[in-house]
Image 1 (cartoon, rainbow, N blue to C red):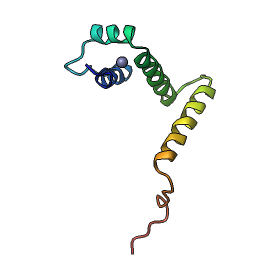
Image 2 (tube, rainbow, N blue to C red):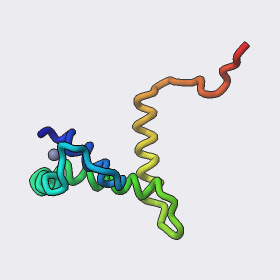
Image 3 (cartoon, rainbow, N blue to C red):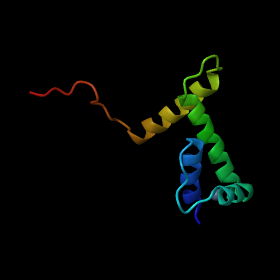
Image 4 (tube, helix red, strand yellow):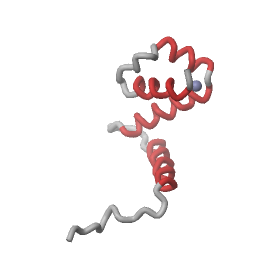
Length: 90
Ligand SMILES: [Zn+2]
């Protein structure tokens, strides 16, 4: 099974959702044990989830840096896109 399938399942698990029917928890753990890139991916997914959860007394630095990185990434995709603001009907 390709990594992308495991990552879909990882994303669900990190979010506390049910795993896809073709992936079981033990299979996921076995893949993680043998696939370092997927382990790192899971860590990122967890950090992202923590960053988007409301924190009471958390240290926001890590979350801010991660969000800044993600925003920079999004900017790269939507280069030169202006027009969220200022479209008038008429
Ligand atoms: Zn993998």
